[in-house]
Image 1 (cartoon, rainbow, N blue to C red):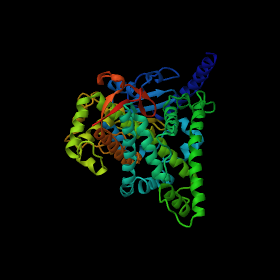
Image 2 (image 1 turned 30 degrees about the horizontal axis):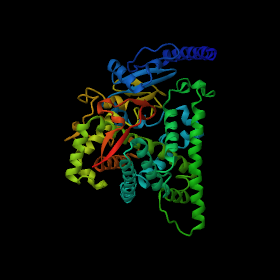
Image 3 (image 1 turned 60 degrees about the vertical axis):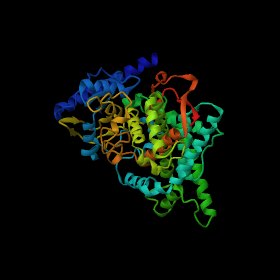
Image 4 (image 1 turned 90 degrees about the horizontal axis):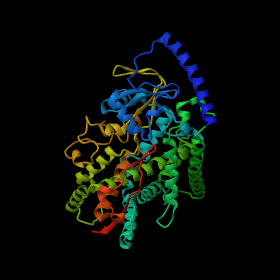
Length: 499
């Protein structure tokens, strides 16, 4: 308590100085018209308005103050976007002005914000790294070339679930999906599995990734009061340094092992992502070097594994929570493919109801409730309001997906709402932007879309499902656990049954 009192006193003094100085500046330059918002308290501003589930708290505030509103979070002016129309304004019409990131202090660990394509400002370095991702990892022809690998990994998932089916035991859906996604990525990048069903490696990696997501998503005093950066009072940057360090050590080991192998062999035999990145690095080190390769891998594994497996877990949870949806999905698969048959990626286009289930899952449970915060480098006008220089801009994807002016019964799981519509998740329809939009849209979108559909269709068509311990569908716990991603508060465990 003594420390807290000292901290508040310290912050009060600093804030008072800054307020007086900003008043002086305001009389000279003119304040401009900020978007409306709740009245801030001294020192802490509107921090208490965030609560434990800020995506929901800010959605409620937007009903009072509008789809573009201002909050004062400590010393940081924050503009919150809560409608599809405002999101289009930010992410499409004025995309370039809102393209740079607001960097959380946690991402200063191991200088990740200065080396990662996710956090770099729009620049030559960022364009080079982004081009490599789009051309050499997530392009259509690259993904098509790895289609057989994805089918193999999903078949391994089905074989694992089949063993649980024979034993009559429940499957931890999120854990199984995470292991599948992890091994798919590791085979795509390194040509080898990072885990198997008989080891705990996948769970350890999942806990490491969730640790990163959790620390990155935690409210951090330093982000609201930058003057505390030297002290790291909550220890978030320290813990993130440990998490990042473990992943960097793993990827450094993989890269050095591959470099050694390349020196021993006269030709490259793997032709995987790592070889592609090393080839580019050797040919043109200005585009990407070993450190940037290392950090790109960190981005791919940290973001790609957790978001994909979490979406699959939410989709399975929703169809088990709504049995009539599961019956419709099974009927569609039975009609198109036949009960129990393996699903191929080429089949997905013929399964509109399955696609609607995935879209509805993204709407209700977006992988990240807020797009990574943007930061403006100069005053910008948006719909008659001023977004001041250095303001943080949050796009509340969760609020947009639950907007009653856009969606009928927005809190209900209704895949039928997407049947017969062209609304998609690829960044053009701002009512549904789980991957963002504009030039900073998530580059992994094409792979995530393929994997979620393929895994979900395969699990539905290969097995019937019942909840563990005789729980009835309507008794399921559907609560969320907030982090930079939205996980289920209670892992989904379900018993597979022979079809």
